[in-house]
Amino acid sequence: MDTNNIVSPENLVYAKLELMNDTHMHYCPGCSHGVVHKLIGEVIGELGLQETTIGIAPVGCAVFAYKYLDIDWQEAAHGRAPAVATAVKRLNPDKLVFTYQGDGDLAAIGTGETIHAANRGENIAIIFINNGIYGMTGGQMAPTTLDHMKTATCPEGRDINLMGPPLKILDLLALLDGVCLATRQSVHSAAAVKKTKRMIKLAFENSLANKGLSIVEVVSTCNVGWKMTPANANEWMVENMFPVYPMGDLKNI
Image (cartoon, rainbow, N blue to C red; front, side, top):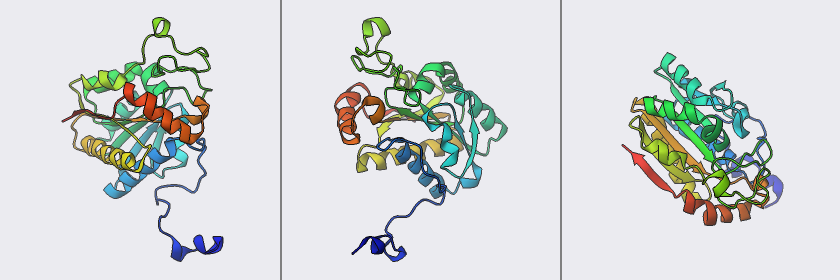
């Protein structure tokens, strides 16, 4: 079978999602964002919510999410996605409203908005990408950066005596009464992708059922920021990120 036969319609075994626009993603090859985008699109499509979903995308690597998923989007200032989502959901209580945030956004400049939206039990879903670094702005240290991990702003490695330990923001949010789901997943393997998709679906269903705030943390790679190949980044994540940010549900009610 030559190349022309491989790409012919009758040999198609997996097609692009209808919700995905015909736009080449700007994400670095090997990045986890593209996989998570596809999972979100799959879940929205399976639930039949394309016309009733509103995504909130703040500043960060995913600021251009509106280019890739054909749903309604609202941009937000850096860290303010939960506040914007709160307003959107309260004005449109019948809509599915979710935010898509990185760790430099949610766990740093947006910590206040995130914690208070969770404490109020806002009926929104948060998809939280934790790759332990600021990706878009050049690989600076994030609140989630590991001890001794080197970044552009701590080239000798994070010193917890000076900078504190990695912030486990999901653990904090799970303690709040307004949170109904706090789960930590990944997309580094086929099995992990399936589990993450299930949890994204549950988070969206919780939002529609007005059960409170749901957050799905996806521990991810930033192979460019980490200065690794995609394969090595996956291995490094499993060996170093997972012990600090273990997989599983912290809260599911």
